[in-house]
Length: 120
Image (cartoon, rainbow, N blue to C red; front, top):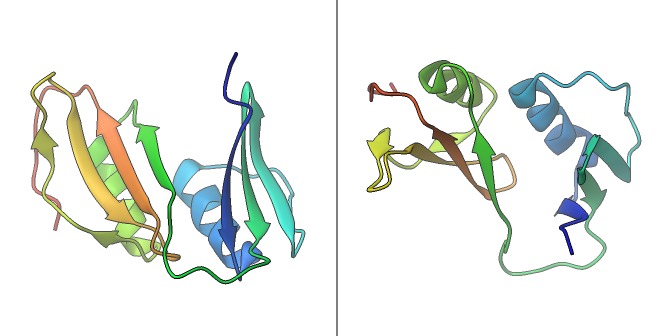
C-alpha cells in the first residue's frame, strides 16, 4: 500500500497552484481553473476546486528541502506565505520551519542542514 495523492482544495485553483509551482520550481504547463496536477512522481500532488465550504483546513504538508532551507523560506515569504516560527532543530536533528500557504494550510519545510539561521 502507498499514498496515491495529496490534494489541496481551494476556491482559487490558479492562485494556489501558482504559489506551489513557484515555491517548488515546477513549470508543467498546467493552467486548469478547477484541477491541476503539479507533481506526478510516485505520489500525485494536486490542487482542486473546493466544492463544499468548510470551517477549517485539515491538510498539513511537509516538504523536504535539499538545498538552502533559509533561501526556500525567504522565497515562500515573497510568494505570500506566513511564517509561524524561527528555523528550529528538532530532537532527531532535522531543521524545520512551519509556514502557512495563501489558503492557510500548514506547510512544514524540513531539512537536514547542519546550520540553523534566522528567517527575517
